[in-house]
Amino acid sequence: MLIKNIAILASGNGSNAENVIRYFRVNKAINVVLVITNNPQAGVVQRANKLNVPCKVINNTMMGDSIQLIALLENYKVDFIILAGFLKKIPDTVIQQYENKIINIHPSLLPKYGGKGMYGINVHKAVIKNLETISGITVHLVNENYDEGKILDQFKIDVKPGTDPEVLQREIQKLEKEHFPSSIERYIKSY
Ligand code: GRF
Figure (cartoon, rainbow, N blue to C red):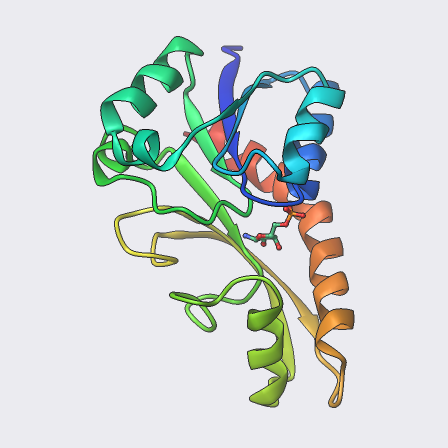
């Protein structure tokens, strides 16, 4: 079995990043070799440090410079990239270089509630405002258009009328913890 290396890119709290790191500690087919963030204040930095995974902070200049970013990824022999709450756009050259090898998680059932501005609590507020009766998560490949790459997996939950957006957010986060790592594993192993 050939071990695949992954890098996780995250801008925020990093609870999914931590969950993915822990999952692949036990399950050794995939190795989390690097965490990248654009935000030195983000919770994900502490989480990566605590778990002894190298963490690189990249600034806007570096984010816009595909050559530097690709060099960093190649330096760590990264085979696949996982986006876990990464709020910056991935440069097109990186997307082309890692075609079908960048996986994102989105906290709605895409194509609904994706695209610009649809992140964090905004997603769940919109779902409730539109009286949706189901919501869920989408694991998908990343292409040049926000939230539009091929869908790999979706997992659903019922939404009761009048649910508080924060309650829905917590339920969605639970669903992410339950499914994101195994979804990554399935895709990479079948690649
Ligand atoms: C998750 O809800 C994920 O769906 C979205 O960003 C959020 C990241 O949360 N893409 P965390 O930083 O992993 O806690």
